[in-house]
Length: 276
Image (cartoon, rainbow, N blue to C red; front, side, top):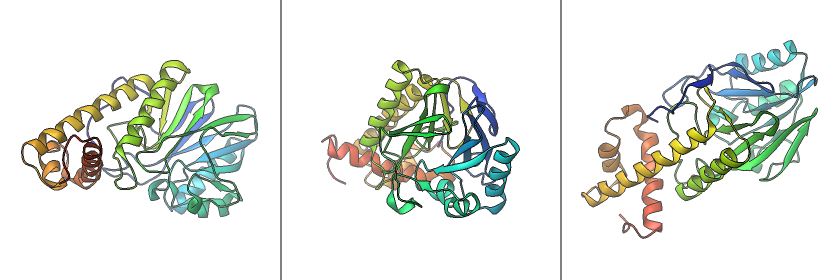
């Protein structure tokens, strides 16, 4: 979606980002995926075990590059985690599990390979690495954020991107849930030492609090614009998109329409508009 986040990115897309996180960029750039999907290779310094977050699309070359990157660092991939089930993050997970012999853990049971899922508040430990699981629904119902407390970093999937803003994937995603998730991330950044955003797409962000503040402000502004558009006579999501997102690349309008449907549902649920 449109817009630039405040502040300079902490690192370009791909390569080392924090002492415990290395990005392998998938070759699937598009208006929706930005530079491509960021597959994250996580490991405690000095450990020979690694965790992979979001293997990405079903691209054999990319999946093997992730394995090769770990091996060059002297590490064996011991576990695969998913932030959510969209294909650009999860489609390659089954093949990646074959290549690495790992289980795949996710919130959605349909995405799991193995007996264990993930839940909010859980702590995953591999080779001395601590990963805290944070439920952040809204973009999708199954969206998770992974907190690396030792790095003061969060892996946000599509909840917060490295460039621009994300969509609320109506009807699975819900705006009220998304706003609650952003507020929770805001608290983590303001009060619990989270400084760095490791997103599912786009560059790393050095100012987590500024990024979440921007997202909250952007959502409030868009919601006000949608309400104004309805008051001006727009009666369909398509009409609202044409009015509110007129300055956005039309390639992004289908995604914008999903967000608008989520916004209209939110406004109706809160009694701010009547059903269209």
